[in-house]
Length: 349
Ligand code: NAD
Ligand code: WQD
Image (cartoon, helix red, strand yellow):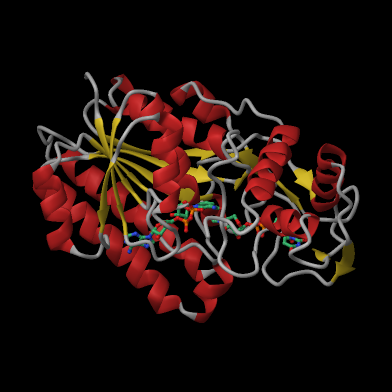
């Protein structure tokens, strides 16, 4: 297939904006649909500034079937990368219906609109959260899904829906069967090395890296390290952090794989996108101090409810079937986070 046109849902968000940038640089045409409920158009303005290329933006909600129908009529979409969704675990526990309505119902509307337009290639943003608490700390794709919070369950449900629509096409030997890659992200951090786009959380960040970076720049007084009594070498939680640019490159590899033999005849397959190696909270803090020269004021606090001691990806399947693996180091992740933070102390504001 020649130059593909990719519809990116949630393309103005943290990961979506980095994906748009890589797609444009790789020569794809890009169409974005985003309701800007957790992002600003400025991210897309900057993507176009960095690449010197333009993309088409539709300010719309994926739950709006009529709006999606217009997009598929106006644009010759080949593949959809589906990032649009709400992603805060704590908020999902307080507002579960809002999460199911946005993430699950929104995905159903999108899948219907795609089916109607006969656009049946999708790359979906899933999450390591779908695994819950498996017996091994290194997660393999064949482990059962057992999400432990509403956010994670929205991801598991959308995965199930996508597997079922794909199976239906395979059974019917459909002429244009669904081809779907479910990408299970571990902990995305970092920013594009231009320092022009990055993660711009609303209010006080929930996640470690943006919190550390806001302490370093003086916006927040002190990091709370949630627990130092886990069964890990230094007692703090271990996660598999992945540079957002490595992560979005995995999406481009997935788009290519959808065209290949593995997906001919239709398929829906899950892939872990992670480094296969974890770092502890204190290792992140000390890397941040070493790379940036800043001192991070922190205290040891009680464990955060719902946190696991340690998990990281088995990324072997993504290497074997997508030809993808991480290229960037922890130092890159820290340096790029810090460049974004110092150039944009107020985010996109
Ligand atoms: P983000 O909030 O920055 O981006 C999501 C985008 O989707 C935002 O621009 C938001 O405005 C948009 N959106 C939400 N609901 C919408 C709707 N109904 N219609 C149209 N647009 C809508 O989040 P992100 O970190 O870029 O995450 C992107 C995707 O990756 C999400 O699906 C998220 O669940 C998933 N994911 C994220 C992480 C992470 O740690 N960041 C990890 C695993 C999976
Ligand atoms: C990392 C480590 C914390 C903040 C979350 C979602 C998950 C996925 C990615 C979407 C843990 C510790 C954190 C702080 C700390 N998102 N920590 N002080 O919890 O692994 O994953 O984001 O799919 O679904 O749950 O990421 O960055 O919040 O935490 O000590 O202020 O840092 O305890 O060990 P997490 P995180």
